[in-house]
Image (cartoon, rainbow, N blue to C red):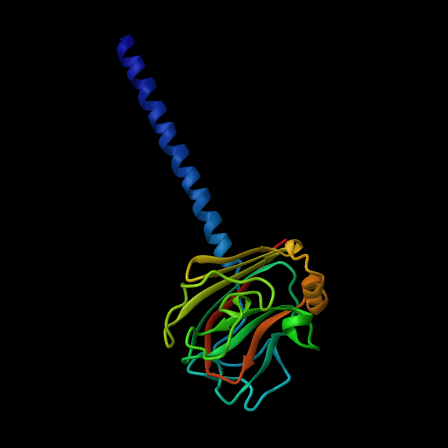
Length: 225
């Protein structure tokens, strides 16, 4: 009799543990789903609604086959109408050989976004110009160099995620963290003078075209506290 009671208690303990584990997994799953669904699409695949083009170059930007395209004869700064402070910005991109573009973050609508805001470099490995370490793909242009070796070859799709939270800027390329910077670590007075945008806490987000073919898709953003 005592054996049966002990056995029942043991079974109840196991059942309670299973229920608790399932409940925990459910909460984790719900949290992950909520995290993913909090991303807001910025591009509808059909129009440039929600974007504004500043300093148009050539043909500017176009929408083709559901992609946002900076043509080889186009460019300029295509920025969100809305401003963002802390956020996670996700997108996919592919370039032609030697393709050159950029991502403006916390940028104003006037002035050079790479200096008055910040530019995260988009640059194919086949680019022929002479480069400094802070000009390779993923770098905070002219300020913080990115880790190299994680960019796919021209013509293949890459996934990028840029996180701006307070003074920390992170860049993930194809799942690898290539920049993890605290802007407060930038002490050089010449750099700070040249890049007043490092002090900005809010601004527009978008693409900085430089007259080469670069295509984008699955563009979304999640605002952070």
